[in-house]
Length: 201
Image (cartoon, rainbow, N blue to C red):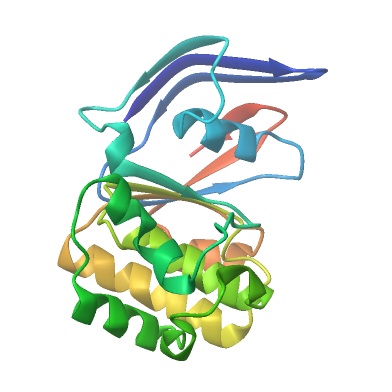
């Protein structure tokens, strides 16, 4: 994915990306201080925010191939199961019930399959959000601080699943995380931001 001359102004903040290449099939870390534009950048790539100018060449990816996970995941007024399979429902894909159960079991959520999703703890909500992002086998996943401030068990679960995905059928990841040790350990390439610009990769 090639991003050129991308611009966005929000109040006094201005983001400008002259030329950035996101190599497909790799795990990309995006790091920088608070307020430097990491979330704004991800939201433009995810088509949540409209750029003021510039171009994002998705190289064949469509909205159906892309998902974004936020630090505070949005859950519908429905069960854990209905939230999990929602991306499949949107795409007209029939869920594989056995695969769904295995996925829930691995994350320790199988016993809560029929539970009202919004009654989950914050950690359980993060787990559900992560599983929901993976369930439809996207080609680009953007992770905005979802891996930050997790308990060690959940953190190990998420990172292990990311590694497994990359071994089986590599996809593109863009991960924002303030815990730099995890970024350095997990990512293939790291992009540094300051004051609305990428300063080096």
